[in-house]
Image (cartoon, rainbow, N blue to C red):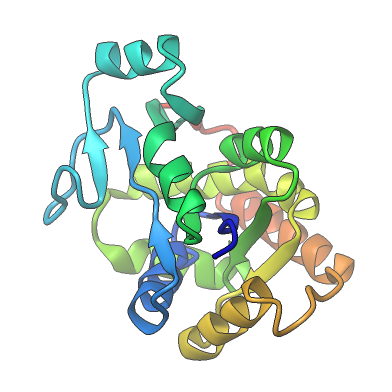
Length: 218
């Protein structure tokens, strides 16, 4: 059995990254999900060691000092990182390891692992992104606003990713992602017009709502 692929899945909060990965894991047995470490508190229903390893900041910083993380980044006031040992073990066993990480982490992985595949998940439009964030009902309106502003900061990184995943129909999206990862379908050329249009729509929406000067950090 050959070495597995390292797959980075990034994208705007609310775009559906988690849904795509859950379906891949359910439908195909050659994927595993790397569990990230974070300093944020668990949301309702989240379990330590399942969704994340929830740790205090001191423990996270110790993992950094011990070279125990493949990548790490700070996102709206909380630290996130990928534990090294589990990922390397799964790759050796021929598994495709998926990392759900932000753009800072994605760029770190690309630098350390040039053969990794980077996927960026977006909804069909900026309007849909806002609707999905509000529809989750997991955060207050100020937190949703900060996530939209963070999306504007992340948007310039879209062009650095190998593949833009437009998550409109989940089932079709999952099978297309699997086909690209498994080599059954070549990675299509990125559509620069879509990237530019999405960024412009997001900025106009935030400007119209007077959000552009709201701090993104908590």
